[in-house]
Image 1 (cartoon, rainbow, N blue to C red):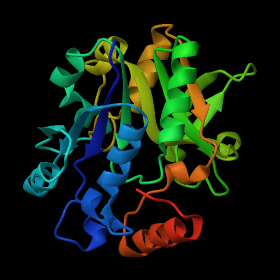
Image 2: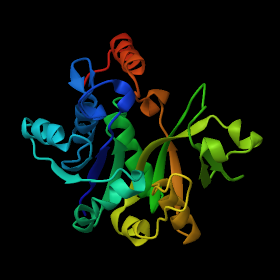
Image 3: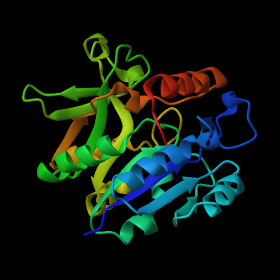
Length: 249
């Protein structure tokens, strides 16, 4: 069994005021995408597929500069995270192990968190494991809803949450471990019947729960795992955090 990684890097990031894909925006002189790929490699995962979209040629050019091989697939239309993963279907079909799916603009997802969440995922015999974090301000994030035994019951988006759920400070980082074959069993069943007309990857979690599969949530030690950047100010904040905490790519 071989484990692999799919990194979502198709975003345009209009608010970045940049002519390049958002994931090529830099933290301490290195693209955020490189931070994520570096963490994956340090976690012992060599088989990587990057899902590219906006300005895909920029991603291609960057990947060609690397000293390790990375596969890439093109998401011609940006129709949500679930749709992005659908573009990597052929890549997933070649694997019989587990896949970690990561956002290419979350530079502080560490190798330790990737390794430790995989350990939890495999020891629990899960079909899927959400990587979560506890944050001081969960506004805007999907909430991790657990049952009385601490097991994952649902991921509820902020806009869909009631008052009780909004008080939850454990949030979805947007990173997941899936058993490849279990993910493939539900991937084509994800629907776009929502206001945005998009295919959302958290719906794969719901489908697996509906199929009575074991699904869990692993809480990262550091809440920085959920951090990303949507505009220059947030990117500068990531740079300041990296400097202050001594993070390296």
